[in-house]
Image (cartoon, rainbow, N blue to C red; front, side):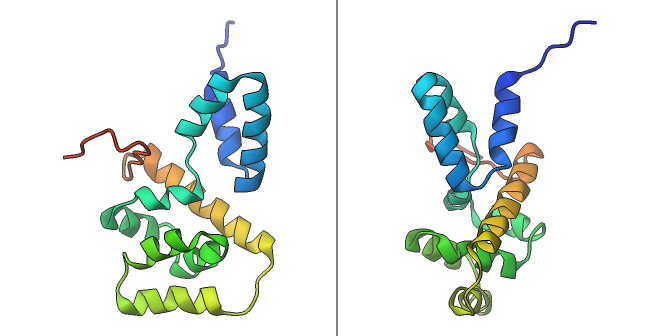
Length: 143
């Protein structure tokens, strides 16, 4: 029996299960040994920061998979630009809910990173189902 394993796909799936810091460190290590592979992995890797590529409809689909509190928790360590982008997608009351979590009691960093991983996992599922499309270089035209 001859079994073929897609190493690229396996590496990508492994990276998807890691938090952002670990992903970055591992990609840097890969880049030292194989810069082209690192670039290809990074282009295909969905990260928490990729929320900035979602449309309002895609965000609505994501919120069917996760709750608003989890999103607010995950945004605690996000860039101000990402927090603003995501917040602007919501109604005033939903925006207030996110702000309450952001300004709420301090939470362990591990909780925030876990929340980000859960969101990325949901984004991956939706991407594989074709429900959300992440076009990082904005080269595609969607109709």
